[in-house]
Amino acid sequence: MTAIARAGIGGLTAGTVVLFAALAFSQEAPRLTGPDPAMENVPAPPLARPITDDRRKARNYPEQPPVIPHSIEGYQLTLNTNRCLECHRREFVEASGAPMISVTHFMDRDFQVLADVAPRRYFCLQCHVPQTDARPLVENEFTDMSATTAE
Amino acid sequence: MKRLWSLIREYWEVIRRPSAYFSLGFLTLGGFIFGVIFWGGFNTALEVTNTEKFCISCHEMRENVYQELTRTVHFTNRSGVRATCPDCHVPHEWTHKIARKMQASKEVWGKIFGTINTRQKFLDHRLELAKHEWARLKANDSLECRNCHSTIAMDFTRQSRRAAEIHERYLVSGERTCIDCHKGIAHELPDMTGIEPGWQAPTDLRAAPKDQQTSADPLMRHTLSRFLANR
Image (cartoon, rainbow over the protein chains, first blue to last red):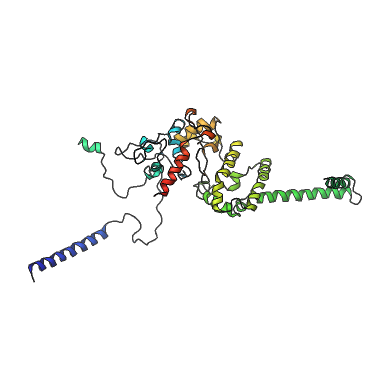
């Protein structure tokens, strides 16, 4: 047996050991979604309550789409109608008191500024989401960047 | 025309003469009893047409608007109160109910001739149908809403600040009525292009009158549907 072949077998064995160890370890990790075993029927957890205190939340970083601080239950957002824009459109903010959609929402992908909200920005909930009081499944270790730079 | 007139005259001659065969007692008592039966039967039949079961016995209602209702808060909610079709679409008071029922004879026509007998036809007519209903509720100051929701019983402190402010400004002052803002609470909305929410844009920002309107909305809708089609 040549030295190269021996090294090859050694490498293979080591690889297999590492693979099995990884498999065994991954089985010990807690499942984040669904019941364990996966096909089990379990009672559904109670729905989390939406946060509807109407207070604007600071963004965690400048580009974060602001979260929705009010209930949007039953709001229709379809090709026919956009309930969000009934308050947040430029023309209506004076009467509704809602913050206006940002100027970036008027630009198409070529940065052409349009008269109204750009089609690619029409479906608000693609970026802006309401919050609930749900307990996070994993601990959040996010640090605000101003806190990081202050250190 | 002349023959019709003579026929009417003939019947009138018969009716205006006193009866020669039936006693006065029979006629008055019989008239009373038949009256009661007729009136009872009429109202019972009217009430039958005033049930959810009757409404959704037609597929036009069952497959379109009823399915949409089942997903809203007026169908299921935490306190288990349910509004059925007639609760919102038929006035509860007798005179107005009869008036609405007479209007509804148009709906019988629509049913017979299949005006909205497919989903596509229904969607094509949705804006028109919705506009009728908005106009009706606007004219009667959202009467059907107020059968359950009254301003006097509203606790503004239990509403969100935003809702309380708007209700105080528009509802209490009587400047607006429920339907002005709460459109599409129980059904999906038609194409809302050009239909303002309850609050209006300041006058100088409003779109020009309909005939010379070059609002961004139709353009917007066009680009949006193209945008979606291209994906």
